[in-house]
Length: 213
Image (tube, one colour):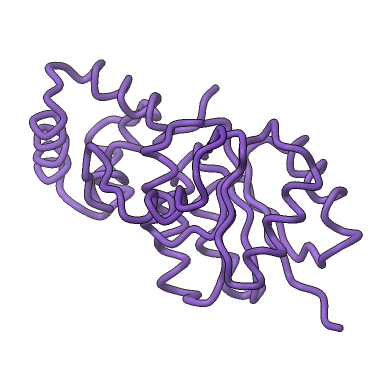
């Protein structure tokens, strides 16, 4: 029987090595990436069945990368493996096409189980998140709206600003004008009812838009 092809994406190399060692007896790990941009650029050529990725990664976070990958590879299964226990963030991940959501302190066998569930076209969320909630929890997550609906472009701008880049640098990387970046920045601040750039960066960190140091 053909083994499933797995791609891993996390900016912590030690974790990637540990996940690879854990999964190789069960699946073919065909590639690893350390940021979302590299993942989007490189994963399609590897033809993966499942991508296991973190949310907080540099240059492009996992939610944006996952959304773009689902457009490039509609049949790929996305399993998020993160430290963030926020249920709204989990809801956003499922809304954008995730098949699984686990925490990094989940058991190793749970990741293998989640991948197998995804390959069977089923959704999986770690019991560490549900805390005894009823089985309809995942469906409820999929239907929930997040409190703050940012567009894909807004998330890209916020990611880069939160990494400490200037508006000119962000404009260059996204191939837009600095005025456009400023427009997105102040639109987000208005949407989120934030009063300063510092509060916007704090929101990005809390929401795992950017990787924790």
